[in-house]
Image (cartoon, rainbow, N blue to C red; front, side):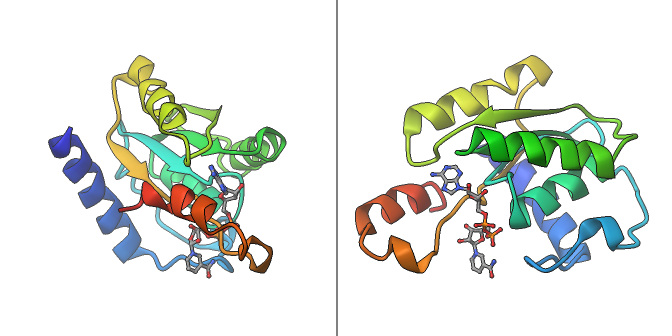
Length: 150
Ligand SMILES: NC(=O)c1ccc[n+]([C@@H]2O[C@H](COP(=O)([O-])OP(=O)(O)OC[C@H]3O[C@@H](n4cnc5c(N)ncnc54)[C@H](O)[C@@H]3O)[C@@H](O)[C@H]2O)c1
């Protein structure tokens, strides 16, 4: 498990270092040489329904990975999946969505197991998070959401 995590982390770091991404980045407009550096790798991206998670999903698909888009919002996931397929119509990897609340350990367990049918997890991008002003009174919930990052 630790070995798989380390392997995934090294892939993530190498791809992140070679491309600077932030919330304003539109990956579809970046001129990245598709190198299929993640071909054959299976990735989970949490918080994939928008923002950095969706852009990372698109980048991973362009690099040949199979990707599970995980998020708490199913309708947002469906839109994100449509966007990813539109932007990367010729993806060599597979792509699917999974509803997952990362503050619930049972959801995370089911999410990781959902990749077994592809041969197991290589990359886990723990991106889901909340940082909105109206969440200020929900300290314990914020801790639950972010606990999986540490
Ligand atoms: N954008 C920034 O400038 C910035 C700065 C510092 C840290 N971050 C962190 O980076 C990550 C992504 O940022 P972003 O701007 O793309 O955020 P975003 O709000 O656009 O996207 C976050 C996604 O996480 C999902 N999410 C929220 N709670 C969840 C839960 N319990 N389970 C599963 N999914 C959940 C949301 O539905 C949303 O799709 C977040 O963790 C954020 O805290 C962002």
